[in-house]
Length: 274
Image (spheres, rainbow, N blue to C red):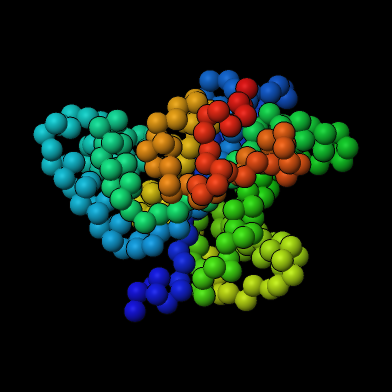
């Protein structure tokens, strides 16, 4: 019996953007060169991870054997980039096009949430003035994880979630708390509990191809949000099942929810980040 038939749902979680806000003198850096306007967290639910891993490994072998890429630094087997794993930021455009071709035909669902860093910066300043407390970046990350999963964890008989490792510390306990909070919010809203086993682990994209997959989808989404380039998201549009803009409160206090079925994300709807 396949995992899908057995009710096992597999998610792969990564981030895009950075959580840099201020320099050493407290000056805001958001929007400066090399500093993102937004921070995104996304989860890819992959129906058949093993099959998709095989396809990506075959594609990498094919590209590495292609004389067209001879001399391209990212394709060097000693460079630790495309030769080791697909990473949208590091891959050359010709490689990205081939990866997108594979992803378009894959059974992948994307659930993502993002914050605008200028809004977060104001919140951090206000909190510090009020309490003297400085919140770390993990708090923001964990809040977005909760947003993504609070309506997901009841859909299968069992959930397996792999997070891209952040730094050197083991954060599985904190991530487990974020998942438990997601369950609690679901139960409070719908008045019914979630009794589904949920396994959490951390890994790296070079070890788990599912993390390479979610990286590509988040890269495309970030290009839409920050650079207003729609073509990449347009290429993969059906996969974006949910995108939450937590800081667009023009219609609702809790943010804007874009869904593939009834409210797909587009440039016309998206509130600019600057």
